[in-house]
Length: 437
Image 1 (cartoon, rainbow, N blue to C red):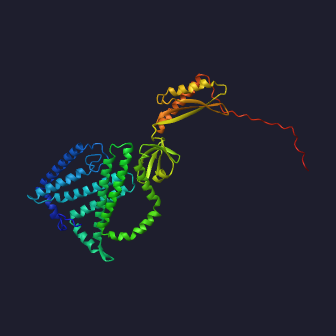
Image 2: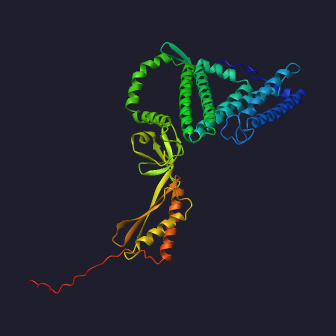
Image 3: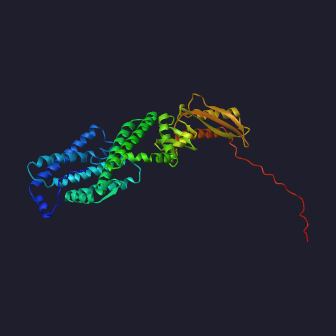
């Protein structure tokens, strides 16, 4: 990695360097830069409309605003290079010597930040890494403009140390890390683009299958990117074969649960028995599956609570899927009435309360039965079928039917008994035992 810079020598005479900005030709350069900004704005807007990215918030090229993505500064940099190549044939350059490094730094920062935001949306360490990329890019830009970058690189090249038969310098190590970071960011960018393309307009089982393909693609690209990054740093990959046995032992013991969760995630997505959007019950927690990641699944209850469930539990434990092959759900309500109530009348009132709700299915028909002789009254159970919905919809319908039952019983004078308990008090006429001296 040996970049070529337009200003290879340090600036010894600052006054002579600043004198270039007092020449009339600077106005031509500034006008060319303004034209480049306008063209980049128009072309970026045209691409944005052509690709229908107005509402796309997770795009690297097009962010929430026109200048938020990578497309605008990248086009501006390309147009600035073209303008510099044309202008340098007719006059000396001054403004472009600063504009080009600034635009390069801006593109590097924008690419790194946007890719990290798309790939790791909720990771807390992303902001710190974004700041690091920004500081490194602007520092390199200042050294480039001032002409000190070649001097700094030469000094870093003199700092060397020997590792075995190889000699490494600090410059080689830094350049290797920068190349490795660029390769990994490029891998994340490609995987994020593929994931967005696969998951767009996908629902149900199709969404789960596309999620599995997306996760496998990202893992493969990151693995290839890591191999290329290690090679760019100067690490001999053949030496890694020595540690293959130790890595296998580590996966078998220390990383057993982690590896199991990753494998279970791919199994869930491949079998498609549990899909994104299904209503399930796992380990007494009931809710809708929001996402199935490679290591864990996210389940949200009707009350809004979210549960992070390791994928291994979804494979080895019993899971109730309320959104399986059946499209109906059986619900029941239990009510107690006084023992002197008319059984047939109560049954008819219960069935009428269910029939009054349009969301309760008429076929199969609801059923009402005398289910038990309770301690305080007769217990009736009314059961009915509903279309499978989320927990909130089921609770709403159950509440509506129970309120209809309560109103019907009150209007017909049927008593709902309160719990009663009889307490017997035994009075004893026995005298107290005589006192003992």
